[in-house]
Image: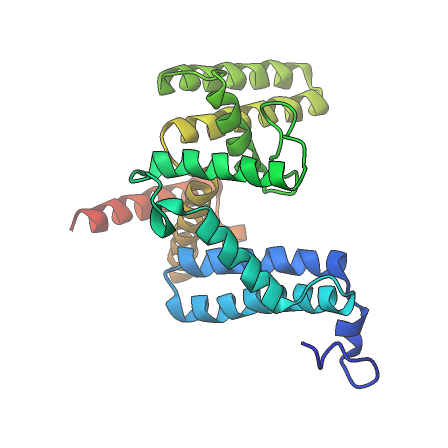
Length: 257
């Protein structure tokens, strides 16, 4: 990376980049890591982790050029943080359950902020990055609200809220205001994330799995249509829907074996 960033002999594209221009690539590589994991592709995971590591090296090199920090500083900082935040492993603090560790982690983070002279985040929902994927951010906001008591204690109550939001969408469909319809769909998505949270499910992960399932079943529709000499654009919705049900039934049958 140092060679790529050397003026005169380096790569023109790499030399033009800065933290902001590289940030989208960093996010993309992180998603590609998650994709390889979702596909159980360990060979792909090895490659994607390398690509993600390259992003860390890229940012560290740009910081080194500015005299801020270098790659070794990054490694040293995260090592120190891991030791500091795991006193139940590296010292004698009690933290034998995941819940206890979570509380310990939060307390140590607060202490670190105080040592740096930073003010504690204001408001119960403070500190959730805006740049997070929307589903993940919704989950974190709801979790923070739940910690101060703004939460249902029954998943069925959340399901009732989902039905309420669906009814509100139907009312807006009758009025025909697209802006209000979109806002109500947002409320519905937020409520569905809350239901996933109450079921201890990660909404990003389960939606990712559903996307894969959709792709798999649609591919079955395409194969079945191809066997009939057709493409999806040549088939009726009724025909494709029947093939979808067949693909779904076949999957269930395979899962029972």
